Image (cartoon, rainbow, N blue to C red):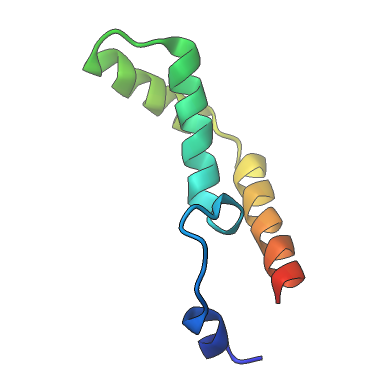
Length: 74
């Protein structure tokens, strides 16, 4: 099936399963929620600490999940 078909489809706007970055943003949001920063500086520190600690395995798992979802859809 050509890729052109995939890009012509109407996709749900809130399709987290198909956007790996959205899953990672959700992880950051959870980290920020747990840390409860009281200033912009604290918020920035929480986000930086998250990215510094984010293992490559988590990123790989998120991408693999998207690939599996696309295989199911297509």
